Image 1 (tube, chains in turn orange, green, cyan, blue):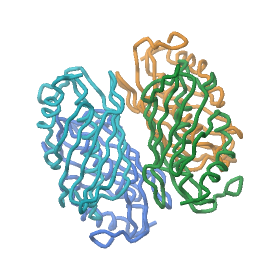
Image 2: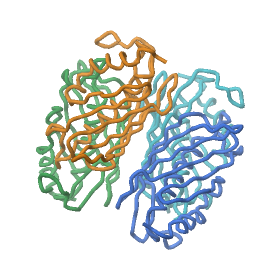
Image 3: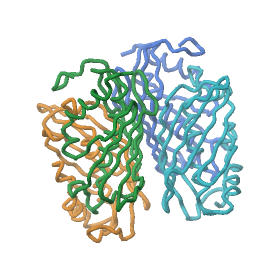
Length: 147
Length: 147
Length: 147
Length: 147
């Protein structure tokens, strides 16, 4: 759909301040799917020493959102309409692998899904699964960066 | 249910590392409901200069979770089973007020809801609404802090 | 928004075959909110003698959907983008009261919520709460009835 | 887990009154996954002649629920804690195939997913995807049939 989708996703990543704060990085960008990694540190923990539910929902949101950005023309914006996260297992380990994909693209919104896996002593474990409606907006967004 | 619910919630808050990282603070703790504030800074932004969807889902998760913690006995753990967030409006302003409450408490889980409001030049705007199932577990959790 | 919203909702109700099959009827239609009733019979039961989860999700869907229809111009269609239902308590009683409302209307979609209450020997009990994204489409829908 | 899982699921199906009313039938029962069929008739339609959102959510609920029942011991009950359905495309065709599976089984609840496909002139189309938390309860449920 967008021959420059990779550049467009990377532009969005480069401007994403909270993503940097968390330490989440994309490692693969394909049409309709992305993959990324977070090295787990103490800042990501909740009260019981597990990865915080907010870190998990943030990664799910970004994996869905960037997958959606890979399927829109340059200049078109993607925003989260709604996100549901199922927390399958507690997050423990060295890092998290996040996978996001577009389940069904559309004119008005892309339905997306994402999965999070922890890597703990070399063992991969599915810890969360999310489904999300991502809005696709052609309007010039009135944002800080002029869209 | 728990005469020391306030202390118990504050104990959980004091150990919540990611909450500190975000800058989210509880301002009110009542039985079955909490209120908190986040001063919006640049670290909370996404690619278009709005508050990041992950920040919003994190606050929704914590508002629900601490509301749930206010309705369990000391030593009992609360964990997020699932969380759904509806993103009603883009987040712009000086701060976010988060309100969380238990819609229906139970033996096995508490159904919770939360709402987020931005304060922008004195104007309060509802930007997100969440519903969540919070698991209530009597087991000794095998956590870093011994539960 | 639509001075004839009541007629428009009633037109949609009159054509809704599955709604009749279930026995669900609207009792109040206001701008952005509706109320309805279902008399519980044996056909609504699941394997344990409670009201079936599918009946509950159907009522939640309709309460949200008709609330949304009350806030669109004539000829504009509403369709369910996604629906999440929290099943708070088992459904037992003589009838169900369903309340639906638009939480936040928009150009592209209306965010809606609904609540279901059973009436059991005169006692009203909240049994379910739903949140839904309702799409609002101006296109001529290619439907059986010509929109 | 339960060597008689097939019989146990079939027992639950045989008592499910609303399922019969809809016309939904299970065609395959394996450990942790089920498949079923609904022949679409006029009673399943909403106001635009498409399959009603309530029919879709009902099938999603049952596909998840019976998949969950295939992974519990005899006498243990399964109930829907929450269900989220994404409506990917309008439902048009001769029949619906529903697939449900347990994504992650647990002591307290099974996380389940389901997908619905329409068959329209021989063409299979994914129209809905659901995720659900199914509660697993060992208690004697106070139901009509004595559990």
